[in-house]
Amino acid sequence: MPKTAIVTFKPKQVNKLLLQPLSDRGREIIMERHGLGDSVIKKTLEAIGKKYGITRERVRQIEKHSVATIKASKEYKKCSHVFDELHDVIKGMGSVVSEDDLLKYLAQDKPTQNHFHFLLYLDDYFNKEKEDGQFKPRWNVDAELSVKIHESLHKVYQSLSDEELVSEPDMIKRFLRYLEDVSDDYKKEEIARRWLSISKKISKNPLGEWGKSSSTNINTKGMRDYAFLVLRKQGKPIHFREVARAIEETFSRKAHVATTHNELIKDPRFVLVGRGLYALKDWGYTGGVVRDVIKRILEKKGPLPTDEIVKEVLKERFVRENTILVNLQNSNYFMRDRDGLFHVVE
Image 1 (cartoon, rainbow, N blue to C red):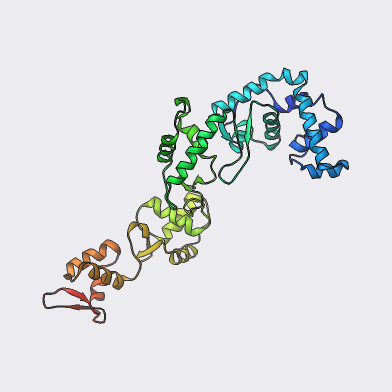
Image 2: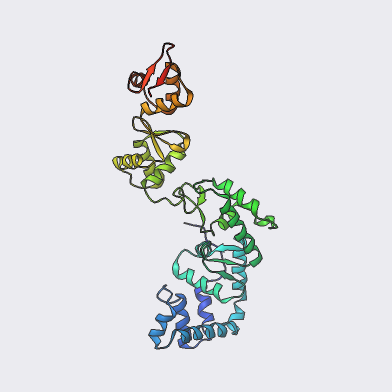
């Protein structure tokens, strides 16, 4: 079970106390707006307005007035220690944290998370920053630090090429290099990892490697993407049956051998380098049958003797020497001169 914060209060009991000064309708509207009752679903202004036969603007006014009533009450003053504890929790998490991370750290069940959220919503201690194109919804207790984190995350994103993959330790180091004038107390891996997760533009794949969220290396959508990550992790050509097995073991995804093989054939990121053996094009392998490989080698290096051709082909293909020799005998594509050197037939 994920680790949760240890606090000395029960948020449901605290909110029950805080809601006492409200009228019945004010209390009901607050509970429905924030999912504090039997339903955890937070209702819209429109939905509540229809229920009570009032406009959405009137619901908004009642909610605003109810919050002001709570904050002016003696019950609210009695709960100052609650907000101090929540402040300490957020500060301990790095003073800036995504809403999802914060609520999951405070509680595992949705009803309790809603009660914690309402407490955060109530107090001016806590600043909520809404979700936008670059960042997830987040809370902070240090607005200046929040700006620095946002700027650093943007710089990290700009430093990444479209398909680049970075190990988590290297990503943390890169991110922290961009953070200036930040207390060393915050420069911890756990906090840096939490700050990185605020971004919507960068994220990590199932293997824990970081990159641009738009990349298929990060946003894995199908068998081909899983196969790419498996091969990249292996670092060497492997048989398509092994690819299927590794996908199931690594990602807990059902991978039929035939389906996996078909996906590898279709995707230009993979190169068939032997009987059922696949490698990544990124490793320097090129497509084509053995004949095509021989042709490319001769076009690049010029006329070569048999042993040199065999040596070069075996760098790119896992085949028998005899297969290479048979291809060299095809006079439609290759010819040998008096010196024993092979040329490409024009």
